[in-house]
Image (tube, helix red, strand yellow):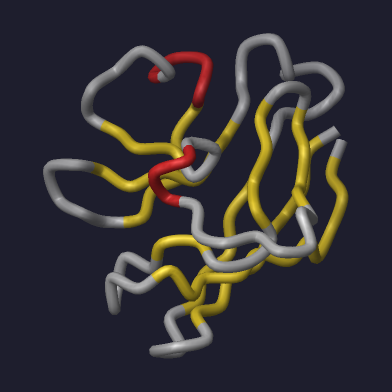
Length: 106
Protein backbone atom coordinates (compact mmCIF):
# COMPACT_ATOMS: atom_id res chain seq x y z
CA UNK A 1 0.00 0.00 0.00
CA UNK A 2 1.28 3.45 -0.89
CA UNK A 3 0.94 6.80 0.82
CA UNK A 4 0.38 10.41 -0.04
CA UNK A 5 2.82 12.39 2.10
CA UNK A 6 3.07 16.11 2.73
CA UNK A 7 6.40 17.70 3.59
CA UNK A 8 7.00 20.92 5.51
CA UNK A 9 10.28 22.58 6.43
CA UNK A 10 10.44 23.96 9.97
CA UNK A 11 13.12 26.43 8.93
CA UNK A 12 12.01 28.03 5.65
CA UNK A 13 8.42 26.83 5.13
CA UNK A 14 9.12 24.85 1.94
CA UNK A 15 6.35 22.29 1.41
CA UNK A 16 5.13 19.83 -1.17
CA UNK A 17 3.13 16.64 -1.56
CA UNK A 18 4.29 13.34 -3.06
CA UNK A 19 3.54 9.63 -3.36
CA UNK A 20 5.53 7.03 -1.46
CA UNK A 21 5.26 3.35 -2.38
CA UNK A 22 3.26 1.53 -5.01
CA UNK A 23 -0.31 0.32 -5.03
CA UNK A 24 -1.69 -3.17 -4.71
CA UNK A 25 -1.39 -3.91 -8.43
CA UNK A 26 1.76 -1.93 -9.22
CA UNK A 27 4.10 -2.34 -6.24
CA UNK A 28 6.39 -4.74 -8.12
CA UNK A 29 7.04 -2.25 -10.95
CA UNK A 30 6.27 1.18 -9.45
CA UNK A 31 7.63 2.44 -6.15
CA UNK A 32 7.63 6.26 -5.99
CA UNK A 33 10.18 7.56 -3.50
CA UNK A 34 11.20 11.18 -2.82
CA UNK A 35 14.69 12.06 -4.03
CA UNK A 36 17.09 14.89 -4.73
CA UNK A 37 18.30 15.14 -8.30
CA UNK A 38 22.10 15.56 -7.99
CA UNK A 39 22.29 17.61 -11.20
CA UNK A 40 19.52 20.14 -10.49
CA UNK A 41 19.42 19.80 -6.66
CA UNK A 42 15.62 19.72 -6.96
CA UNK A 43 13.14 17.53 -5.09
CA UNK A 44 11.65 14.82 -7.33
CA UNK A 45 9.36 11.81 -6.89
CA UNK A 46 11.20 8.94 -8.63
CA UNK A 47 10.38 5.29 -9.31
CA UNK A 48 12.91 3.66 -6.99
CA UNK A 49 12.74 0.32 -8.81
CA UNK A 50 13.97 1.93 -12.05
CA UNK A 51 16.59 4.25 -10.55
CA UNK A 52 17.88 2.60 -7.35
CA UNK A 53 21.30 1.96 -8.90
CA UNK A 54 21.51 5.35 -10.62
CA UNK A 55 24.12 7.91 -9.61
CA UNK A 56 21.72 10.70 -10.60
CA UNK A 57 19.62 10.66 -7.40
CA UNK A 58 19.93 10.70 -3.63
CA UNK A 59 16.84 9.12 -2.10
CA UNK A 60 15.29 10.27 1.16
CA UNK A 61 15.56 6.65 2.27
CA UNK A 62 19.38 7.07 2.14
CA UNK A 63 21.10 8.09 5.37
CA UNK A 64 22.81 11.09 3.74
CA UNK A 65 19.49 13.01 3.52
CA UNK A 66 18.35 12.05 7.02
CA UNK A 67 18.99 14.13 10.11
CA UNK A 68 18.61 13.29 13.77
CA UNK A 69 15.52 11.15 14.37
CA UNK A 70 15.31 11.03 18.18
CA UNK A 71 11.94 9.26 18.32
CA UNK A 72 12.95 6.81 15.58
CA UNK A 73 9.56 7.28 13.88
CA UNK A 74 9.71 6.14 10.28
CA UNK A 75 7.34 5.70 7.36
CA UNK A 76 8.06 2.27 5.91
CA UNK A 77 7.59 0.69 2.51
CA UNK A 78 9.04 -2.81 2.64
CA UNK A 79 12.79 -2.25 3.30
CA UNK A 80 12.66 1.48 2.54
CA UNK A 81 12.33 3.84 5.50
CA UNK A 82 11.70 7.59 5.59
CA UNK A 83 12.41 9.56 8.75
CA UNK A 84 9.38 11.58 9.77
CA UNK A 85 11.51 14.51 10.97
CA UNK A 86 14.73 16.39 10.23
CA UNK A 87 15.26 15.50 6.59
CA UNK A 88 17.29 17.60 4.12
CA UNK A 89 15.37 20.58 2.73
CA UNK A 90 16.21 21.34 -0.93
CA UNK A 91 15.24 24.99 -0.44
CA UNK A 92 17.20 26.13 2.65
CA UNK A 93 19.70 23.21 2.71
CA UNK A 94 19.03 22.47 6.41
CA UNK A 95 17.87 19.18 7.88
CA UNK A 96 14.50 20.55 8.95
CA UNK A 97 12.04 18.90 6.51
CA UNK A 98 9.29 16.82 8.14
CA UNK A 99 7.09 14.21 6.45
CA UNK A 100 3.50 13.36 7.42
CA UNK A 101 1.13 10.82 5.84
CA UNK A 102 -2.08 12.45 4.69
CA UNK A 103 -3.66 9.51 2.84
CA UNK A 104 -3.24 5.81 2.22
CA UNK A 105 -3.64 4.75 -1.41
CA UNK A 106 -4.08 1.37 -3.00
